[in-house]
Structure formats: structure tokens, C-alpha cells
Length: 254
Image (cartoon, rainbow, N blue to C red; front, side):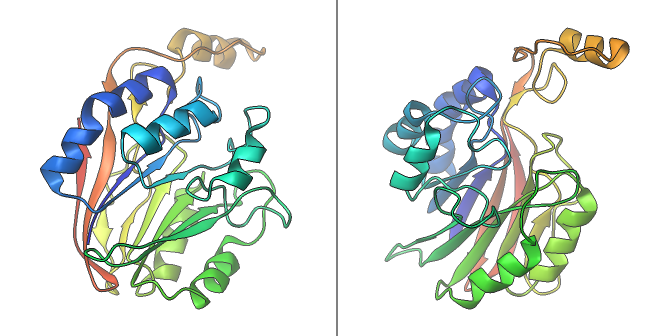
């Protein structure tokens, strides 16, 4: 099984990168499944139904994961209820619209259980991510499992990696928009990275215009943010999985 997962797609620059590169990457790498974190796709906050539909229908994306900005676009909760391929964090409180996990099935590649889990450190209130993982995987019959660990603290991301080692094929971090250098395969066969890094404009401050960000830090006053445009980069992790374990993992940057 071959997988490609892209970090947080940020605004129009990130969406343009997908349109330019994703179909070619899928063919070049011969991947079976593509997972994309899309929680910043709409102007840096949230995702729209139109964006998600374009990704599913025209780019062949298999699953869209999200995070703390999942429901920022008004009315999107109904789409989360209707479309099982777009995930919100599994450990959101009970009765939250949508789904936190999905099983993908392919006769040639095998089955993949995708979990979207959110950390609790410096994040909105949510249930225990570690127990959420345990409960979900206990009921899964898929051959392999991938976790999008959407968290602020690298310590919590790393803890989830060790917690899932040998039980998940991969725990890949999203949310901080900063690519980390700790991509590795843990002893139990779980690929881990603290943050994939965003797919978006690196010429700003985590995707936003640098002048507005600097003004907010300098003055302490609320500032109207806009999406940066400079230095667009696509960041992804490519995995090769045999059975339930990862045997190859490397970064893709375009």
C-alpha cells in the first residue's frame, strides 16, 4: 500500500498548489490513497463544500481531514453529516456533526482506517485523544491505520506516536504549519512526524500576511489578517506500508 498525506492546505495559494501538482504526484508515485488536511483551505480558516467537492471529484483525494477550524465556515456542519470522506476530530464532544474516522477499501491495495484526532494542549476543549484512539482501533478490522494528529504541542504529538506504535501504520502531525525534521519509523513499524508542514505560502507567518502578523505582535491589538501569497510550497509525506507496518517514509516538497 502506498499513501500520500498533505499537511494543512492554506487558502488560495495552497489550493493552487494542489491543482498544479497533485494529479502528477499521484501518478508519479503510484499511490493508492491520498489524504489531505483541509481545515485552512477557505481563506485560512475552515473549508467550503465547493472546495471539498472539487478535491474529491477532480483531484481524486480520498479523505479530507480537519481540526479546530473544521466548522468555521457557516453551515458546513450539514456537509460533514452528509459526506463521510471529510472528517472532523474523532474526539470532539458527543453529538458533534460528522465523522471522525473512515475505512477506505481497495481490492488491490487493501483497507486503510483513517483517524482524525485532535490534541488537548493549547487547543479547544475535546475528549481524551489517547482513549479515543484506543476505542476506535479496537473496533477496526482494516489492515492498516493512519492517524492525523492535529495538535499544537510537539510533546503531545510525539506521545501519540509512541502510544500508537505497532498499532497504527502512521501518526502524522498537522496544525502548526511548520515542517519538522523528525520523520522516522518507530520500532513497532509506525511512521511518525511531529508536523508535515502546510501546503501554502511560506512567505508569511504560518500562512498569514507577515505585516499584519507583525503588527499584532508589536502592538498587541486585534489585526485583520489576510492570506500571504509569497513562497508557495507543497509539503507531504509519502509512505509505503506492508501489512500493518510502514517500511518506507519520506518527505515530498514541491
